[in-house]
Amino acid sequence: MRLENELFRRLRPNIQRLIEYGFIEQSGIFQYQTKLEDTGMYARITVENNSVSGSVLDEFTDEEYIAVHTVGKKGNFATKVRTAYLSCLEDIAKNCFEKMVYSTNQANIMHEWMIYQLQDIADHPFTKSQNNKRTTDNDFTAYKPSGCDKMYALMFTIGKRKLDKKCDDEYVDAVNIKVEPSKVADLLQSPGFYPAYHMNKKH
Image 1: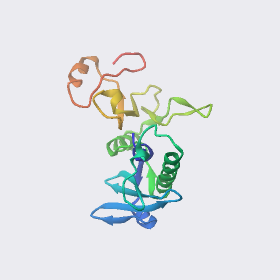
Image 2: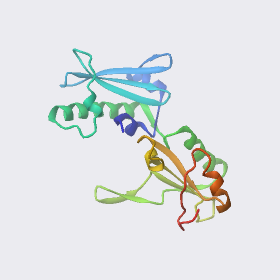
Image 3: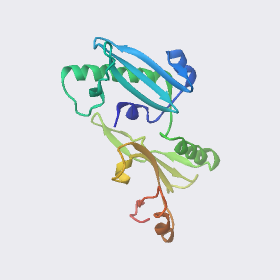
């Protein structure tokens, strides 16, 4: 997965902040360029339709330095460039973007509908290990009706390849929801539906 996709997957751009930061807008596309200090490279960042892409190029030849996006690429220079580029992306994320609950608009709309219209309760039921400590895993959100301890839906972010091996490694938002067993077979014939199980290992 590219650095940009990982870093910005749950963020949304604030147009005014992009402009104030130095992004130039043309036909709805925002672009920003900056030097990566002590590398002889510069970064070009593009924001289009809530999607962020970027490249690193040589200051003298304008040739793209693709190693910055090569997984497992080692070496002092490659590490230096990658670190400088990541620092640039993190600063843009901090100053120009707003955090969202999920990475897709559809999932965020569903979240708001369940919370504000249905007045359901959302919480994070799982923990994960981070820096040798157990912390709340915000990638998983359970939804329960008010006054009930049993969740009816679990929303989370997952790599598409874990759902379908033919897909790429991009992240998607998914919902695990309990359905009547008699409806499972028909639902699995529809695009976007995959087999899943509830806590009791039943549909």
